[in-house]
Length: 334
Ligand SMILES: NC(=O)c1ccc[n+]([C@@H]2O[C@H](COP(=O)([O-])OP(=O)(O)OC[C@H]3O[C@@H](n4cnc5c(N)ncnc54)[C@H](OP(=O)(O)O)[C@@H]3O)[C@@H](O)[C@H]2O)c1
Image (cartoon, rainbow, N blue to C red):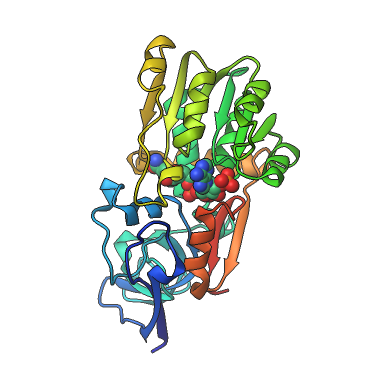
């Protein structure tokens, strides 16, 4: 029986998350019973939203708990099977968390086709890509010629949102926390403009790159960037509230910006939150469209890979500080 390394939540963060909030333990891998399979983790999705789970602000995730394996979606290979529906060698996705091996009920697994590199099921074709797709298209209904602004624009969700908006004929403005990220969004992903929210002149720069205002704002961050976006919104604009990453890595999150609700009223804005799993029955059709865009080159998925399960805690801490470009994954085995 192989050994199984697990990354456990040792303690809940007070202030910012640190690698010391986790510990690595080694046990024997578990045995599958009838109807179950043994999965070997190939790669783990590192998600900003998991920090909200540790903060206790993601009500759908329940109360934060210590002493358990850190949660996360993985791509895995089936190494033992007690269910004929999922044969040995199948590549699957499941919520195994940060560990080498896990036993999963066969009925809970999504078996992946071999037509696409499975790593994309953690990005473009996974919860990340579905968030970008439904959070933009269903919540804001962007029209050709409209200006779409997106925050955390060089991150996993954000870089896909901007590209989908561009595919829909919109003018796309990204906001990110690093000049090199902004350059790459424009040069490599064909955003119309990108501005660095850490620059002292950010509000003026945002104004300059949105001369006709903003029709749609896809909000990954909340905080100061949301506050700035509200002042650039056009009449009847739409704001998709995807997440609040600027307020996750702290024990003292700030209240919302002062333009709410006054600017919503005066500008007749719609501001709507969503959770991606409410769209699960529509994932297959969305994936088909995303694969088409990837294959014809109109959508470029960025994968940001860190190697080694033992490096997952630092990969997560670094993501919250803006160290990733595109979808961060941790490669656990080949
Ligand atoms: N509603 C849903 O169903 C759903 C599903 C999935 C994800 N989400 C949300 O989507 C958002 C993006 O998640 P992700 O997994 O794709 O993460 P990500 O964008 O790949 O990584 C997080 C990024 O946030 C930026 N950031 C960190 N602190 C910030 C601050 N104070 N102000 C502005 N930006 C900051 C960093 O980039 P910079 O260099 O630009 O600072 C960092 O790269 C999160 O809010 C997450 O909760 C929502």
